[in-house]
Length: 337
Image (cartoon, rainbow, N blue to C red; front, side, top):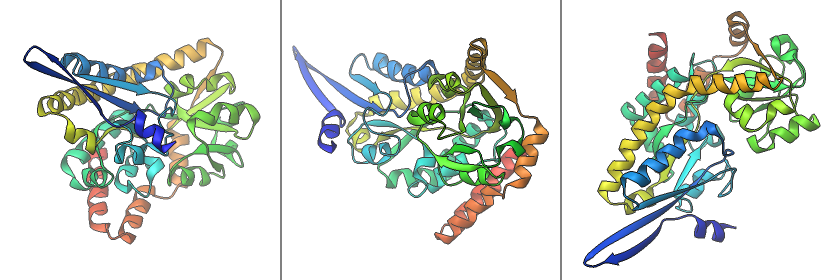
């Protein structure tokens, strides 16, 4: 399997000669853990823009649904150059990416746009964020701004936090399980690709995803109710293998960086409309979306430990307490503005 991925991934360079001029073509394989859906249009447009602006010198092949590696594998695959690009979920790599993981700590951000604003600042102004990616052999281009998270299941018990007691709810990473345990729910780690079957069979009572991905994974077909929003955070990172990056000429690198900035801005501008449209389509198909009141969310947060401080305490135990304390102070300052 590793041999096949190495063949599929890695950068493939083909040269052709036209008279005295030589044109190179770079074929980049982009491993994605999510299903192909309109929710990822910005990433498709990012890839297409690079192909267009490079006048065909670059071709980016996006392989969805874990076809080049599961979500939990893509960081290591990209780091060693087995895939050229990847969508990386920070929460899947709590040990390798402890600073990136912080952008997915519950009850820190009030909205997807705030999460991206703070993430952008952190990767540009706080070196520890980029440094931990460099240690894994990848570099970040932009974040997916996830829509806020909803619980989706067969009953409407999710409309009140008391109704979550003893319910099996999908979680991931190190912090979201604590959020669920705080209200008596049972955290269960389930990959996105397995959620439909888990809900259908009853091994999960509720999934936990944003509206766009609830629709993309057809979870509204097996769960009649979605309750939320209960969590806002930044989503996956789009990264490139450092090995691939170093093989690209400077003019191609410049195009990629410019298009990454455009993609980040476009993602933030489109996320709210995309989430609303997904909700409308699911509602029209008979799904029921129940909005949790601000008081309910505040009660949930009050029952939950200060997870950002917990994160900082854990980082201190790893010898990174000063950097983590700086992150907490700056994030709280930005969130309060």
